[in-house]
Image 1 (cartoon, rainbow over the protein chains, first blue to last red):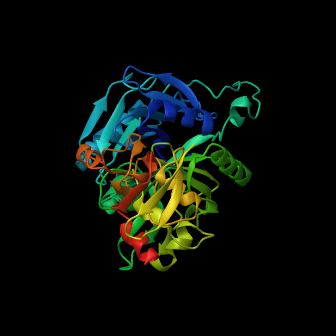
Image 2: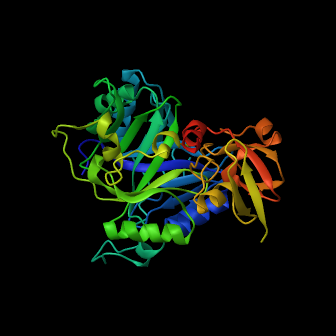
Image 3: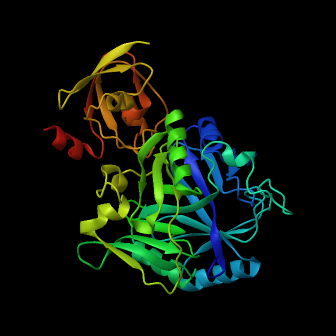
Amino acid sequence: MAMNGVLRPGHAALRVLDLEEAVNFYGNVLGLQETGRDKQWRVYFKAWDERDHNSVVIREADKAGIDFFAFKVDGKKTLEKLDADLRAYGVSTERIPAGEMLETGERVRFQVPSGHMIELYAEKKDVGNGISYVNPDPWSAASEKGIAPTRLDHCLLYGPDIEKVQKLFEEVLGFYLVEHIVLEDNKTDLAIWLSTSIKAHDIAFVRHPEPGKLHHVAFLLDSWERVLRAADLMSMNHVSIDIGPTRHGVTRGTTIYAFDPSGNRFETFCGGYQTYPDHQPLKWTMDEVGTGIFYHDRKLNDRFLSVVT
Amino acid sequence: MAHYTITIDETGETYRCSDQETLLVGMEKLGKQGIPVGCRGGGCGVCKIEVVAGDYTKRRMSREYVSEEDEAAHRVLACRVRPAGNMVLRVIGLMKKNVCRQAE
């Protein structure tokens, strides 16, 4: 349930080093459905239970990482209003015409102080989840192919000036702070988890000197058992696993972090509590940061803070 | 399948690596340390090494971390390199300090 005009994460555009290797990974191992290819050689995917045409778009490039991350808003009026609000706030925006991405309406693109490109859009073709809109079955063959997450859920981005990013997301886009990790000075946040819904996070940021970096894109699974099944499938397919299966203290999610064949980290996770904007944010201190990130290990691994694309 | 001896110059650590796997995964499989482990996909630059001696094959690596000059000078990512002979390498990646401290 969205708390305002920004409904949910809509798409992540990722760069990969070898397109066909990535197509095999996202399609057959992660188990997303390929929904199209465009003239820019981008390949489009959606998770099986998503209804809109695409949620992951990949292109081949000489660097891995993320091009942009987008949120769907609840209509064209909201899109116009948020574009105007962003400009009034001092953020320059760019309009990208409908159809530039397959089956996707006009997008408003802007850069946040952490260096990431964020997009808003109101329209994307409803292609359905393969299950009837009348008297639907609970799942289908597609929900068993590969790891088969139900949806793109959130992302964690690394960059500088995350307090400015938080202010922009809160004051212009209506997000609210759910959890944060505070550095030793008891003032500066190392990390923030923001929601536009009752999900524990729709987007998160970690303070990092290099701008525009991707830590991970997360995909939702229905159960802890599905997370364990994902771990089996990763090993069967020689997927590079970062950590897990384990649990996060932050958001309480059960999780595996792993990498796509180009080194972009992704998360397959389940759970996380539900939250509301009137809830007091939860705070983690640096002496317990390991517990916050990896609840069972109770320590950070070297990779969590240093490996990004 | 051929196997080769890989030597990490700083630590003197050696391990056997087949030509079917990368220098990084070959090291990890044997529980050895020396080269920092990141994404294992050529994207993050953490496992950057300099090949001091030996032949190898390589796959595409992120230009963010490996320039054309790097590649020409055999500064490459261990996760994208497979040995084609015995090799000697030096660790030059971002997390070198962490790993070499452990090895001391």
